[in-house]
Length: 252
Image 1 (cartoon, rainbow, N blue to C red):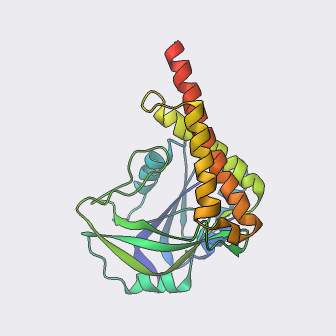
Image 2: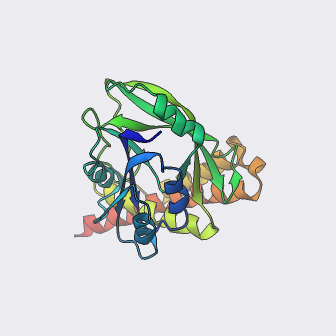
């Protein structure tokens, strides 16, 4: 059954590795909005090959503002916000065809996480994230990183089915993303939050201990070690970059 009352909205940049898998799982939706920014791979070509996709191109303004901009292109009030590395299960899609939407509700997805094709059961585990909402009732926060859908005065309801998440296909993907996220975090918080080399070291070290030992990442094999080290590096670099930007700001 064609889903006509929910628009799927994606933001995409150099997403050719996973975009086809994602869009294949969205064929039951009449409208899929892809807001593409600064891609140098086949992202645009892939998106244009799907008849239910409406492709828009523009600048990346930070995750929150960019997602809100992408939502503005949707013709439906109801928005399912996804990442280009997420794939809907058949059970999830079927549940949406049976769902009685209530504008006073927002809806969460259950997301399972993978490195390559291996499910990570411990240091990532499963996520419950708000992703389906009425755009006339709420929106994303304006944070450039760690954005979320505002849930004030709305009921939170769990959707049936799972969404599979394939965020990293290679070790290089970790390095690229941690550099991008740490830079955006530092730029978004310069002059607002304090930092220091000690804070960067302490946060990075704790992130490794938490991920690898407390969350039992060691049970996820070598992938758990990669993930724990990536968490450590991301936290170290976001705080050391913030320290450097604050230092430069004071010197001006």
